[in-house]
Length: 471
Image (cartoon, rainbow, N blue to C red; front, side, top):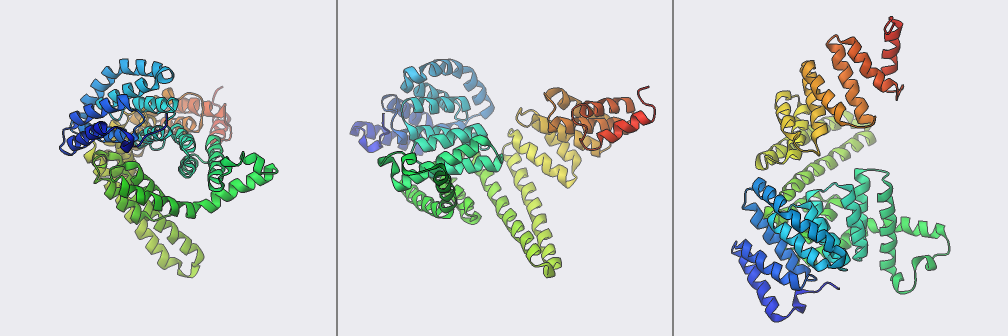
């Protein structure tokens, strides 16, 4: 089923959509949602109506007690989720309807958005699938699995530039990621095929005589497309914003591309424009993005200043003073921006964790402890929050309290990766500071038995036995 423009629907349906849009403008969000759901039940292929529904869902959610809405939504969405998942292949239209009903209760429900994306894929609605996945990305901007699926969806939707951007984001988050590298290759080939219209003249392997040519073309696509493609994407997105001023995806594209070319000032300006839209005004992620962009702009200046010091050693003293000033400005900006986010969104524990981390760096340990004690409630940042709590108590020489945190983390981490080795080492050091040598050595041995080269554990173990320990 191909996606359909609103103008292709019957006039009476278009009139209903106009009424829904008017209801949204008049803040009658529930009525707007009701109309949109009714239209989408008959026309799941109309993405414009789905976007109007999404804006209404977000606006309604912003007026409610979010904790209660999420709790009630979670309890009442279970039957929809079960029936919706079962219908994905059998009747994807019904599955999409089930997903939207869940999202009308809680538009931040990632499972419902995933159901919508999967059902759109089964219904052969690639742009709708992209839309659903991008909404998931708003909630989980750095989730590798989501970014991979977004990249694949963009390729299926004939948008290789956006797929390439998703792949590059993955590799910035996790350099060397094999799936991200594979996505870059697929996106580059799709980009080349689109540019040369090779899909109309046979497969790209038929156009190439050997593997070396293929690799060379893929590499060229990545390099050549970078600045030129960004400019083209920006121009296209600007036109799309004019045509669909309420569509957040177009703003997102502009922001990402301006960030990509290093124009943070324009990126921030378009974040501000996005926040003026119906959906954007209720989107806390845009505030976080604005903060990140301001930070990114200063980081860019710092990198340029550091390079200037390296290139102009005769001006090192003067340039270093400027660099120190920029670094101090960045530290203050990060701290104040994060403090503001915590004040606005006190239940966003990821923000609290970042705020605590910055307070720790500044040496405000008691204030940092307060943030980490709260942020550990979030499963995603629980372990790093506990580690920082341990670090705070250790810096305050409250070693018994630090031991409690490190021991908890140790029990919650499986295997023996680098993070667990670090935690065990910190735990052992606290035992040493407390004069509990036997306990400390037991922890050092846990590392020694799997990684004899880790820091100075070999020296500590050897010294212990040389002094008659263990006999």
